[in-house]
Image (tube, rainbow, N blue to C red; front, top):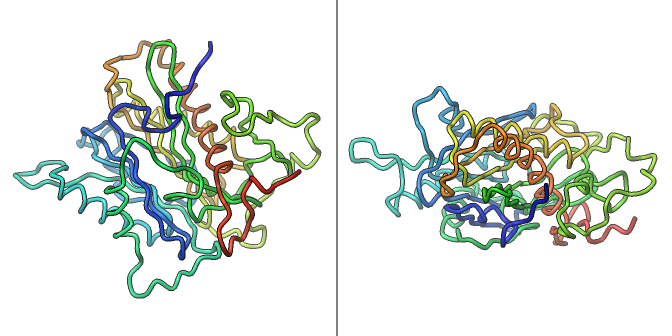
Length: 337
């Protein structure tokens, strides 16, 4: 079975979604928001040992809220959770939210990654900038957006390379679109040993992250466990946070299953993944815009492609990262091995 990317190879190839970024280059941090044009079904799955979240419990299938208005990926560790306040403010001004007795409450589950030790100036004063960044990200939301050193990926790092914000999409033969968005900031490595080859290479479509394939032979150091900061394995000091979305019609339980399946993409693209010091999380999101309800066979295809699309998004985020002042690690483009 052959697959192709959507027209943008971005999360916004899923109809009904817009993405906005906002950054503070001095601090080396940022926020990315996924805005749903109409309330969408969502779920989530955490497999890392050190997550940071806001309003995720409402996504569990047994809880009563059926749909959400936006999702937020933010830098800043626990400070970044304040980004949701800015996103809520922007959506409320637009009349968007869950209505309770005439009051609009925007529902915006949020996840954060740790980018507090990346060379940026964290002396931001009394209050961190995340509320304002969240508000600005909603204002910037559209169908086209930057990846790499953008949004939640501005301050991201991997083992030996800059991380970044990545995105990718896949169109299944039945017309359903699956797309991923990832803030790539793991303790592990996305490349094979010290080479330029991505672990995600077997799932690459075309030359979207260099077309290098896997190295042959596989280098001896590929089996080494390379960590971002070998002497600083602090809980929560890393994390890859992501969204996997589709225009298929899904229940909340199926959206959670989609998030679970997308975690396979972490394991395919990052070595190691899901460690005790990562807060690895995936949101699953279904707009239902295709109107297609999946039978058992089509559902297997959907969940399989969720993993491969996520792996591609992770690699694309790292490949697109660019050099900035005071970087601790170089971007992938400067690696020559």
